[in-house]
Amino acid sequence: LEKKLAILEGRIPQKYPEVKYLGYKERRRILVTGGAGFVGSHLVDVLMMRGHEVIVVDNFFTGRKRNVEHWFGHRNFEMIHHDIVNPLYVEADEIYHLASPASPPHYMQNPVKTIKTNTLGTINMLGLARRVGAKILIASTSEVYGDPMVHPQPESYWGHVNPIGPRACYDEGKRVAETLAYSYAKQENVSVRVARIFNTYGPRMHVSDGRVVSNFIMQALQNLTITVYGNGKQTRSFCYVSDLVDGLLALMDSDYSLPVNIGNPVEHTIEEFAVIIKDLVPGCRSTVATGAAVEDDPQRRRPDIAIAEKHLHWSPKISLQEGLQRTIDYFKEELSRTTFYNNQTY
Ligand code: NAD
Ligand code: UDP
Ligand code: UDP
Image (cartoon, rainbow, N blue to C red; front, top):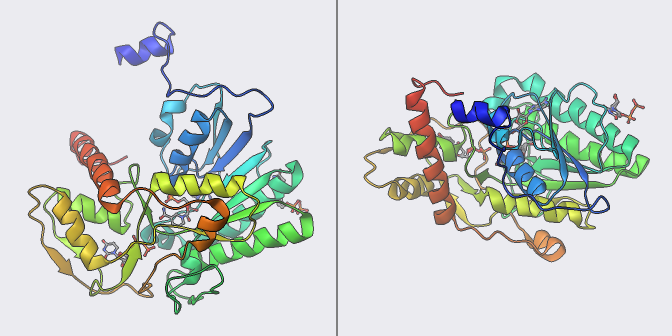
């Protein structure tokens, strides 16, 4: 506390991660909606370190101030507590539109809000982009392919989504967000980029996020049963967060305006994935148990990344082993904080 007070009073200068200096011609003003969330906060770090001005807009539904607090007070950084379902009037050159819950238990908890965020919220951000002439990148998802009948999934596949199932608020919300983006592009000349993001993991996922990576790691670290939903034969392909952020930046800077898959094509069954995590946690005594299947759970998912490779010259670099090791180290740290705070997460 003494040190923090000293920083506040200016007796010790505030230390920020190293930031590049950019002249006013190169420096852009970049709005990141959902910037206090898992992916958004990593993106904010890179944009800040590149020397840009960054405005984070977040309502903290699933994000946390802690994810970006290392930038508080920096002259290039601003944070607005705002729900994007309501209009927002700021100035920006570029918009990364990431605001939306992303974990199934979170988006299913309030489906109406999830739809409003992805439809009304996206209209507001496209309206803002139109007014100020900003380029806008929409964070879409592999969920637009639903439970796919084509494998791996290329961008040309139209998908197989149940419009009234428990995942529909998210899947259909994102599909409408894409439709809105291309309608604004066609009718209003807004410059749009659409990233179809596949399962991504890494540090700063919330310990109670509810997605498979954080669930399995938290269970393995505490020697609890690893809960595989269904028979575990369903597959996913996991991308480390720094690779995703590189892909988003490359897409924004490219001339390619159609949807692009960003993900890691290395595919595993969920059953295999449970064993991989268990083996990466030394001395783990967890057992792996299968349970009831989740309704409408996509059975196979793997990105075809030929377009990203060709047009963005992008492909993922971090192996699953390396990425998981970094993520496990992060969760170990989180767990010690959690215990310290009497099992209360914040
Ligand atoms: P996250 O839940 O950690 O972050 C989402 C952020 O958006 C949070 O900070 C949350 O508070 C904020 N938010 C939600 N509703 C809002 C609203 N109405 N107004 C303002 N802020 C709001 O999730 P994430 O994993 O970082 O996902 C970021 C984006 O990427 C989402 O759009 C998600 O759909 C997309 N995506 C992520 C993945 C993945 O595996 N992480 C996969 C596909 C797509
Ligand atoms: N909007 C916003 N910020 C802006 C500009 C627009 O939030 O800087 C919102 C506006 O409130 C509107 C939506 O974006 O509801 C769509 O804007 P558009 O200009 O397309 O539509 P209109 O204002 O004509 O309804
Ligand atoms: N899953 C699981 N146990 C968990 C959480 C998830 O078996 O504790 C499964 C889930 O049923 C799905 C896969 O892991 O088949 C990925 O789930 P997640 O919620 O991470 O993301 P999704 O790709 O389904 O959006």
